[in-house]
Length: 502
Image (cartoon, rainbow, N blue to C red):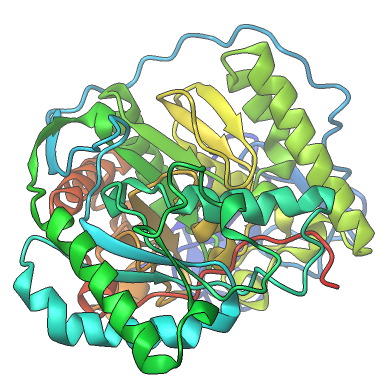
């Protein structure tokens, strides 16, 4: 494919090259003064030390040395600007937004017995109170798959909610509320059909009463392993309970439901310089279609919105949402400061190899996956939503921490954008993978579900790819399996725990 320059905003002083370029090569009328890797930035004008480098119409940083038009600008070229002040944020009624109207308004899902969001899957979930019991639960899952599941064809599978929390932790520390509510709320995920099955040990700090109400904490829902005389007795009791749950789940069937019954997560990982111009804005357009149709869409990753927090504040529909945004972002600033780091620690070597110079550039490309809808609510990690629409869920940026946090907040399907590639997946919800460039899809034909690289080549528009993605979301919500689900690719549930480990 012939190389092109992509300049996002007329104010930008840099553009990215769509293909790797050689020194002396002429691309769109600009002569390269050095070799430039695919997706990296080239100066569009002569600039001097201290000058602002602008992409997305915002200042990415300030030059550490002079550059000439056609030179390469990368992570070694820039000094990070100050982050936006939280104290300067205030509420003002956001401008009305006209969203695209979806052509499809229903999907085939599992109605929630509690009347909330519907399931896109019908899973038996087995939740552990402590990591000590995960070995027994893993063996239980194998037995269920082999001996019980074939008898219950309407059940999509069994999921172990294993995690590293539960004991050796400061269970009453203020920040312990985050992992506790995350596990507690995961139990209620709509993909689990209202059936509760909790396995505890008996001496852990995370006691069952911290996860279940008095009405839920019964022998029909809870098994404590220390109460049984050996492994076979444990397994017999667990299988008996599991079969009763499977029988109830098997009575569920997919029905046509409105889009208002969908709760979708948006996440990106292994991002590159194309992410913010192809995959993420395409996901943003799909998000706008979903929100316009009545769905709830969550986007996350605090450090990857931190440099655009003022932009998010302008989109908040209420004073309460702005104050919650300030509170959650401020808490995270302090959390990072305790570890003697700041948001600059976020970009990975892969992000930089893909052309992202710093966290400001990464953030501007990350935020666009939220589309243009106004924000109806802001959640802390693992909190449950109370409104329908676009929600900012303030989770860590780490893929394997953000995913469980969004699951706890009720998503039943996740859309995951990547430029560098990752086999990441969730056992409890299907994950659709969207690549930011054609080369990623060519490399991983059987792992990438949607290729947004056609936006960079000019073959498709953001709206066209976003429409394709929207349709795939509804297909997957209705039972179609993306690649990660077909292969059973999923990650350990790493619940966010900022509290001390004792």
